[in-house]
Image 1 (tube, helix red, strand yellow):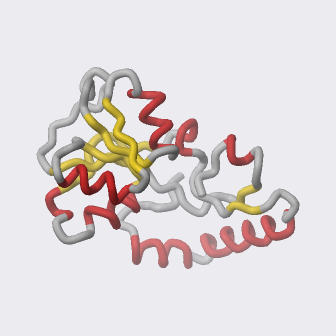
Image 2: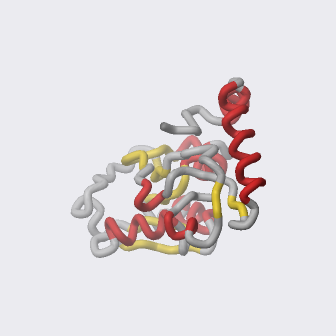
Length: 167
C-alpha cells in the first residue's frame, strides 16, 4: 500500500519495500504535451479514488477531462477504443495490464515519471495495525536484511525492467 501522510494517521507502515514510478500510457505516436495547457480538453483515464486520481485533479483538474473508472481494465478498454487519450497508473500495473499483453506493442509510456511524495507517498510499505509495533519492527528487519544480502535486488530483476526500489 502507498505510504501517505493521510494513511499514516490510521495505520502504521513498514519501511518502504518499493517506489514504483507512476506513468502515463498512450498509443504509440501520440503526441501529448504534459503541461496543463498542452493537455487542455484531453481525456485522461484513471482509477477512481486513487492517488493517481488525486494527482490529476490537483495538477490538471481545471484543464483536462478526467475520466474516472472503477478499475484499470475499464480504462484500458476505453484507451484501446480511442475514447480516452492516455491512462495514468503505476508503471507495474500498466506493464502487466497493457504493455506486456497481446496487443501491448501498440502502446508506450509517455510523459513524466511521477514519484512526488505529496501525491504518491513515500513508496509502498506493508500496512500494520498501530498496536502491532513488534510485528512492524520484525518486518522492517526482514526488508533491510533482504536488501543487504542482495536477495531483494535479485528477485526484483526477474520481474521489473527498472529500479523498483527507487531512491
